Image 1 (cartoon, one colour):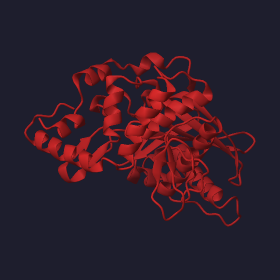
Image 2 (cartoon, helix red, strand yellow; image 1 turned 45 degrees about the horizontal axis):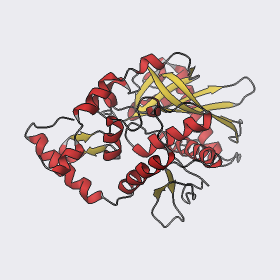
Image 3 (cartoon, helix red, strand yellow; image 1 turned 90 degrees about the vertical axis):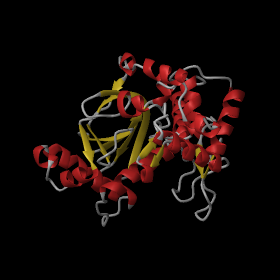
Image 4 (spheres, one colour; image 1 turned 60 degrees about the horizontal axis):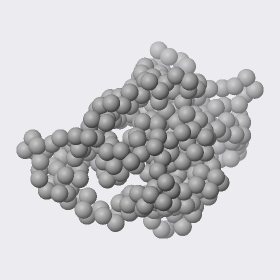
Length: 328
């Protein structure tokens, strides 16, 4: 088997570790995500890694929660599964070949960890509280448990927004989607009176990016190294770095994505830093020097230093898959 292909496969040790992961044993004692929880994904998506929630407080404030699979709590740092994920860097969706190369085993990505409707899951949460005019009042980061109430496709979400489909059967869903759309529009316009609602895609992107800026600022303020996404100016390429240097296109002083931990290793690194910020325990954290050396490797791959080698591995794995010789 080509060495490049071997790097794209999971070892038996990694598969054994994945099989032993039982998130349900960690559910007790965590705060439950509040409000109406929903996810929006493509019709064929099975690796559901994030969700959003909405609720309105008695004083008129609106609370938007971003929630993501808590990889920091299940991926043992330095273990064989962690090593495999770091080597892969991210999930590869090879649509032309009908093949998905997951960063973690399929049994986790499409099963044990995925935020399927009605299933309790371990998550990390960032709740953002807004004034009625869209101004951000406060935020908080916490480890949570979540039950996705509405697993929506993109088409189904737009139907629900219009009061059709599941939105007709569940008026509270239509109301939540319309409130999120209106709130994101008001917040983007900084509370201006002429602010209008946004589409659901833009709404989701806005709240996700806002949460990444808030998380990045908290990690940077705590003087922690992590995987920050930096962009010096709008015409330059963004890259990962240990410390925050700002993201020009997003307009954030520190930007750290965290909601795609099942399919992007940089987000796992950020989730581990989030645990340090909130005082939670990260499984088997190594010494800082070793951790930095490991992150150097991951950042190099994510920034494209070995992109050609990854392409070679993908091509080799496609050939193996066609011959029925794939293990992971």
